[in-house]
Amino acid sequence: MSELYEYRRAPTKGPVWLAFIGVVILLVGVIQFGATQLLWLVWVLGAITIAWMLLPQPISGIRIDADHLVLSAWRNPRPIPLDDIAHLRVNDTGLEAEVAIVYRDGKVEDIFAGDLPDIDTLITVLAERGVPVRDVS
Image 1: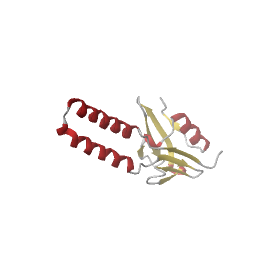
Image 2 (image 1 turned 90 degrees about the horizontal axis):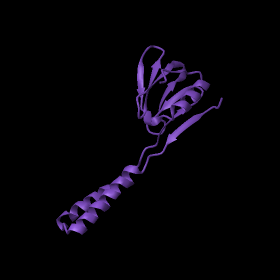
Image 3 (image 1 turned 135 degrees about the vertical axis):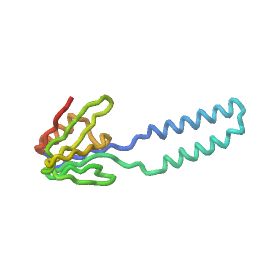
Image 4 (image 1 turned 180 degrees about the vertical axis):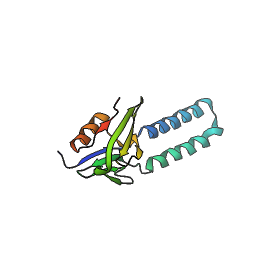
């Protein structure tokens, strides 16, 4: 059994590229149709896109060691003792799976799916640590 498992998902640049392409298309449209009254819109959207690029993008992911499951490990870490977890419940609803922690006292807590690796990896890592994953569909 490995002592520490870390899963990190770096932020994607897709939305920034989409905004940049939108600004370029708008600029081409303003030049092509001579709509100089909309040139200010190109400048404003360009400035917003640049500001968006400069904002820090948080890393998502989890960390699992021998004793704790740490949710949002690089943004707002919240350790959960593995001894308090009865099992994880997975419901595959299509685009991404819904995952919930079921505690030994009966409470249920949903987990943000963007922080988790693929379900097969999650099942393997948690099985090594004695935490079952149920209702996998």
